[in-house]
Image 1 (cartoon, one colour):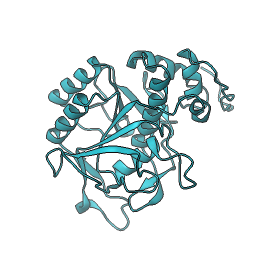
Image 2 (tube, rainbow, N blue to C red):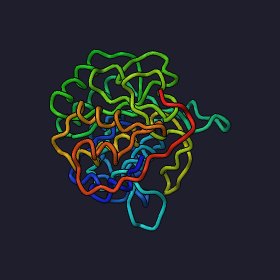
Image 3 (tube, one colour):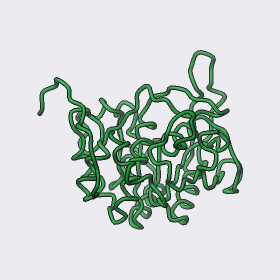
Length: 278
């Protein structure tokens, strides 16, 4: 995504990013000090908590904001962003199995509505929704309210493009698919979502895949861009990012920043392949 070139002029400083997901292991060495606060709407009624170490939220948070220059692990796309975790989903341990991979996460409309409302009240600039479910009128109205207040909503593309629902169907939301899976989905962005190394609870790292991780990558890029161009709204960012997607099939942070007028960039040439242009 050519993020390193953009990180020379922006690390996402002062951009408020809300991660609405499962809990986050904020004591992970690569996340220690990176999470400004955690609110728990699953078990705590919105109470501030120190850490709820669940896998999915920790994976997403690490891709966006893992520490830079700590001689360990990975580097988040926007390590300077102001990160807040809103726990609206939980790990479904009953469905975990020795051979089934990580336990899935579950959410409901009540917890999601509370978390989204809190993110709006807290003035989030970017809201990451690496989740998907059926259409929901209340959640849609809350998402539209967030957009009307200038927030950028980033959503994971529905798995397999098997129909739309919340949040991907909300007009104005930036929907992100894994690179190589966005063909035929006009208006969707694409970012790395296959064989992605990221943080997991307990201080470790693991490889995972899915549009949730692609959305996290895109959220980080958007935080970098919002820090560099604070006046860029969701539609302007979307146009710049769509225009940056070359033959590599992924958004290009440096090219998008140039389109938005960011000066002093030295962008690498985008990767080329043998596929014909269409």
